[in-house]
Image 1: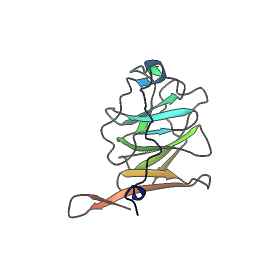
Image 2: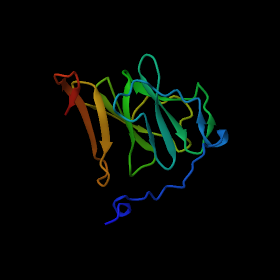
Image 3: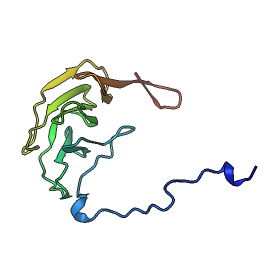
Image 4: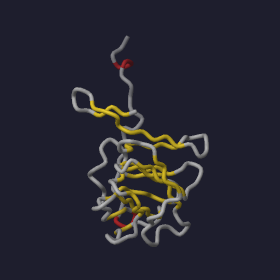
Length: 165
């Protein structure tokens, strides 16, 4: 048996990438540093949402997917949480609905206007209350409509890591 047959060749050996031009990328998005193990952005076919740095509560930015280039620092945001936003997810069956969870122990469901966010959104369609600690993770069910999972960190183990339930 030859030695060569035991190694598998990569299909991507001769693939080279190049960065997008300034006109086809996003610039100036104030991404948060406070999201621990979660994603700080979520994308669907119409919009991109990014958790941003903010003071006095949590907020996130919703940009139309075709809106590339420099983002205005004063761009309207979705800001209805009293604590830092920890996770955001788009609803798989509705491109204009997004859920967010926060350190304020709530999960909020937001309706995004068809034209995008033109002014600060502070009123959620639905606020889900029931967690006793910060909500660190949300996830929409991929095949069942209107089913949302939320999880919080209940305690810490001996190493100081959080145990989520």
